[in-house]
Each structure stands twice: as structure tokens, then as C-alpha cells.
Image (tube, rainbow, N blue to C red):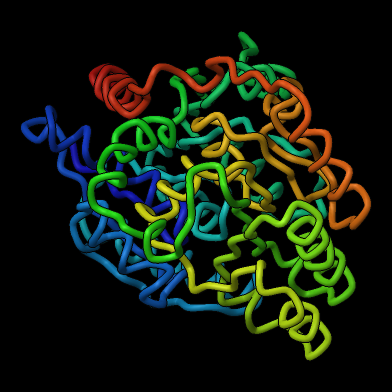
Amino acid sequence: MHLLTVIGARPQIIKAAALNRAIRNGYVDRITEHILHTGQHYDTDMSQVFFDELGIPQPEYNLGVGSGLHGEQTAKMISGIEEVLMSRPFDGIILYGDTNSTLAGAVAASKLHVPIFHIEAGLRSYNRNMPEEINRIVCDQLSTLLFAPTQTAVDNLREEGFFAEHDTLHRKVVNCGDVMYDNSIHFASVAAQRCDIMNRLSLQPEGYILATIHRDNNTDDPQRLEQILSALVSIARKDNIPVVLPLHPRTRNKLTAQHLRLLDNEPLVMILEPFSYLEMTLMEQNAKLVMTDSGGVQKEAFFFERPCIIMRSETEWVEIVQHKAGIITDADYQRIVDAYAQLTHCHVSFPPLFGDGHAAEKIIQTILHENSYR
């Protein structure tokens, strides 16, 4: 089989590492993977370092699309992916998550009748103001094989009619577990051996808070961003605990003079460049608590049994909230501060919700099995 893997954003590169590793470890005689990078994340800190660190082959195709308005960016991606799909026969296209790269891959492949395999299918925030929600819904509707990471994702698809007997599209939903959990297991020990980030920052296990902010509705609204930063400063001062904040380029570019004055007055809030994947893995493992607006970081905090403050109005990973391992606060100063107090003064449980660490292998076996009937 010849499969085209489409990646474009930093989380997709990480997810693709799990599948690429599984193919290399047992299926190279049956599958050839061709990697296409759309260039959605294009700077070294946000993209290239992840290929180097995770051992992923360099992309065979790179569209170099870069940033832009959603429509402009997606249109360029559709055109580029279509051209690649027409260059040779492909047995399927592998898409991850819910970015514009995912949407573009689904649209291009569906027009050319190339089977679509969507990893992280069935996630729903039920907020269509989020572009990611639109992307994931459209991709699911166009997919042939839908690989759901949790039972909740399967249930979401069931409610949308994906299990109907009259489904003439012959779509199949598989609860395979989460490829990010595969990676967390695999790279946790690697990070401990290869990274000295905690020594460089003079940090002790469970002696700091890890925070990330990157979602555009937080970074592009000065008041929302000020609420979040004020909460970080308040928590750092109250508990005399460092708050480690590796800044996404979008966030750094959106800091106003007022934001900078707020941060300059609190040395315990450590403003840093983005971490590599291994550095982030080590920092998540050892944090006292994680604060984020990232979907992937929410899960990784759960994998490493760290409570999480979710600085969004909703989450697609509802299981984390249902099991009280995370609290949704939006960008609300008081809710963030209250959530911190609650999560640091109560017992939090972390049941096995995301599979057994072999999601990538299950995905490959399903693709091969279904292809044998085509």
C-alpha cells in the first residue's frame, strides 16, 4: 500500500511519529508512507525540531503554504495536496486532528475518490465558533475509516448516524485508543535520559506550574490574554511557585505594553521560547499542575497524571473534565484562581480512558484488513 500522510501543525507531527514508528517496526514490507507537510507551521521551533527529535523522515512533499486567512490558507493546501494525489496512485490518505491541513486533505482526497483515514475522529466541542470544530466535522463526514481515540468519540459519531445500517458510504468507526498516549509512553523515558531542561531552569519535580497559551481567541483579545496572565501572576505570588510559560510565537507577538509590564513585575513567571517535544514531555511529567488552552496538552497532562486547568470555554476532551482531572475556566481570572485552589487541595483520579498504548498498530492493522476487501 502507498499511503499519503498529511501534516502541517506541530501536534500532527507528534501524532504522525507514532504511526511512522509502528510502520517501520513491522510493516515496511506492506506499507510505504509518503509524508506531505503543508507548511502550516513553518518555523524551526514549531516544526523542524520535531522531525529531528522524534525520528520522523523528512517530508517527501512540502507545500510551504505558511500563514494566512483560513480560506486562503486552506485553498492553497487543497490545490497542493490535489496535485500530489494525482501524481501517483495512492491507496489512502492519513489525516490527523482538526487543523486546516486536515480539512484541506479531506476535501482534496474526497474529490479524487481516495480513501480517507481520519485519526482522532469523533471529537466534538459543540462550539462551531471554533474553526477546529468545523474542520473535524467535515473531515469525519468525508472519511472512510474513522479512528476514534475514546468511547466518547465513538458515541458522538453514533449520535450523528455513522452506525446506520443504510449508510451507503460504508464508513467504519474504530475505537483504537489515542496515538498521543502511544507517544507519551514511548518518549517519557527518552526525555528523562536526553533532556536537562529542568536542571537548566533550576526546577524541582512538582515544584512548578507549566502553562501554555496559543489559541487565537485568547491571544488575539488583549483583555482575555490579560485575564490569563494576571491569574498566572497571582498564583505564582500566592504560592511562591514558578510558573513556566513557553510562549507560542503567536502569543509573543500579541503581548502589549500592559501585558509586558504585568509580567516584568513577577519574576516567578518564567517567559521562555517554545519547548521541543521531549522538553515538553519532561516538563509535563514533573509539573505540579498544568494550565493550558491546548487540546493536546490537556491529554498529556492526564497521561502523566497531572491536574489541568483548561483555559477555554469548552473542551473536546470531555472525559478529563467528567473525571474531575481538569476544570474549564475560560479566560476568567477568578475562575482560574479558584480552579487552582480546588485542584491543589483535592484528590484527582486518572482512569485509563485513552487505550493501551498500541493505538498506532491497531490503526495499521485495520487499514490493511479493510484494504484487502477493496
